[in-house]
Amino acid sequence: MPSASSLFANRDQMLYRLLSAVVGEQPATLALTTLAIDPALAGTGDSASRAQVAMALNAALFVDLLDRVPTADRYVQSIRDAGEAIVFDHGALRTIDGETGELPRGHEAFARFLAPLGYEVGGLYPLPALKMTGRAYVQRDLPETIPQFFVSELHVSELPEAAQTACANVFGTSADPLGTAEWQALGALSEHGEASFDEAVTALKGALAAFGRQHEPPALADYEVLLPATKEGAWIATEGNAFNHATTRVANVIALAEELREDGYPMKPSVEISRNGRVRQTAILADKVVRPFREADGAEVPLPVPGSFYEFITRDIDPETGKLDLTFDSGNATGIFAVTRNA
Image 1 (cartoon, rainbow, N blue to C red):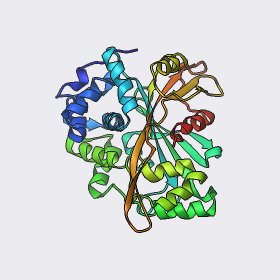
Image 2: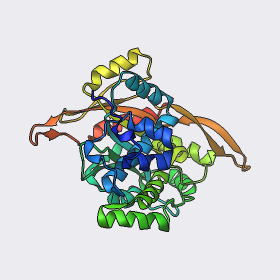
Image 3: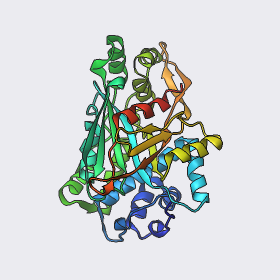
């Protein structure tokens, strides 16, 4: 595995300045001395490129996930103790293709600000068993070294009628975290491919805010309707559009899974292997979190539910292109979704 570098933790580096402005100095230093970062992202100028903003967003989301997922933090600390770096392959989030209040529905809620950061859809992945569709967003400037986003959306219209009503009740209260200032900053990135430091920070803060729960705490009655109909919809009801998982790219995911299992990590029982055999994935089961639910009388009751998790992936070279196979696989994705079902 590559070794971590302190280059990007330098206070003059644009990545450090961006990241510390949104997460603080200590978390920024942690992220930038943990993640393997492409040297092409170095720079100390007055403006930030869209690629730098994209990497800063991923680093901020990585830090946030470590705060919320103790097993992920434990694994990452072990890698830091070994003096190695995390190769951040991709992160994932779940969205609602249905009534979402002020928020654009489905993947469009994220496509609208990922595009100014240089992202485009690199693959479409039907997930019919889950009544979902996944899209892989690839960063055009540095596709192999800036993490992808795997954005899935739940097709509410395919659910039973009672579950559709519950979805409308829950997600219809969603607000839009992006306002005029954020769109002006994103517009600069979209038009020029770079922005001033202040504009980049504004765009970054807005994008980071999108990875949260934009709707009111769900009514317990609605959650109980959603859970048997769509466990993924129930997960979004409590977690919203939070970073569902972060994924480390490793040399041998099968061997690593066995090592982690022996170390006491609650691993997914099997490794998912793509149809072409070049992409292999597994994960630590989701950590539990406590979330509020509204009861009929308006009171809130806290209950434990599945939260986010940490994933591992091995990618082989595509012999036809000679490049790393950056694709995903519908079967793999469907299998990985199961790790948030340990309710």
